[in-house]
Amino acid sequence: MSHRHLWLRSRIPWTILRVRHTVISACREFMNRRGFVLVDTPILVGGAGEDTRSLFPVDYFGEKAFLTQTGQLYLESACMALGKVYCFGPTFRAEKSKTRRHLCEFWMLEPEAAFASLDDVIQLAEDLICHVVGAVLKEHSADLEAIGRDVKPLCNIAKPFVRLTYSEAVELLRSEQTRIRLETDMAHGRTRLQYLADELEKAEKRLASASKQNQKDSAGAKIVSLREEIAELEAELAAMPEHLRLAQSFQWGNDLGGSDETIVSRSFERPVFVTHYPREAKAFYMKLDPENPRVVLNMDLLAPEGYGEIIGGSQREDDPDRLVERMREKGLNPDDYSWYLDLRKYGSVPHSGFGLGIERLVAWITGRRHVRETIPFPRTLGRFTP
Image 1 (tube, one colour):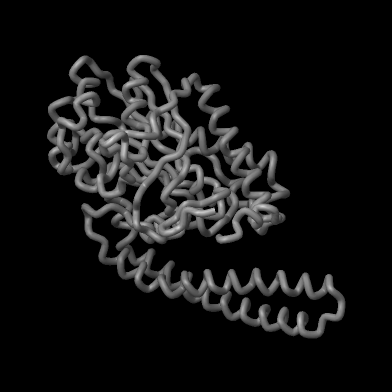
Image 2 (tube, one colour):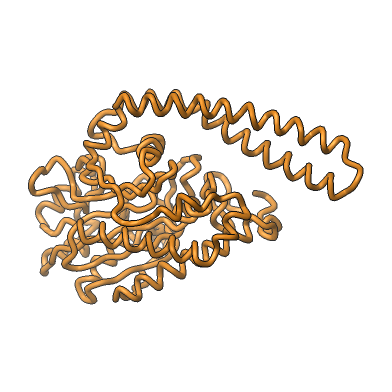
């Protein structure tokens, strides 16, 4: 990480950044073809769009401002004028998390559409992902294979995606099927670990006996690659028993954690929509399900192969009184959102949208374990240079 400025010259980041470019180009091409208008939302904002605990404060001429967590609230304003809008830009979350899925600064594509329901944005997300994956396969299949990405799973991405309600996902996590699959995965992982250890020993012997520089370079590169894979697999195997315990004891009402998303997404070969989460687990702006006010009209899209959430979206609450009630439930002061409440006070329509995390999408497509590999200069907990 300290030599990131030089690491970019090597083959793997060169390939990943080219794929990232294609992903972003395909996203914007898709939005434009669907009639969405690009709206540039502010980077400096006055309040939380998501969790108040993950705001980066900034001094704004003596007043407290924050780096944006999402452009969504501003897009809701714009879609009342323009119908279908989107923004694309950096977002910031001061989450003290060291997981492979988190960055403090990342890029999001966020569409928002008036007169759109939850089902409408689910279909939009399906179409978008299929378009982006298709564009990458068309341009970079050989590149992906060159960095060790098996493209067969990507070739199988097609509509319809799997759909589960949150309650069905909870049942899956607690099921005997999940316990058996995780125990099988652990057994396969231990077998794989022994194979890698044997290969590492062979590579080290080749390096010791090599007489030519190209032989030494080849063996050295193989050793580095094997050691990295062994370290990742050892960490994964060490975490699996705890992931199984958490899954089997999962309580309805909690948000799905990273390990839960991994388990659910590994259960299917296609992306999985998980819908209708408990109201207490999700943001204030998500519309309550009129048929079951314990849950909201939302969706998370989980990428297969254990990659987890890449999209989060919902139908937005358009009733001003209920919106104020939800703000208070979340400990927010409605006075801080007076302009946002005006959008309902002066007339609103049903509308919906979602946010797509570019780094998570690229990590899945390129087969990278950590999202920091998918952005040129990652900003993580404790690191903001180079």
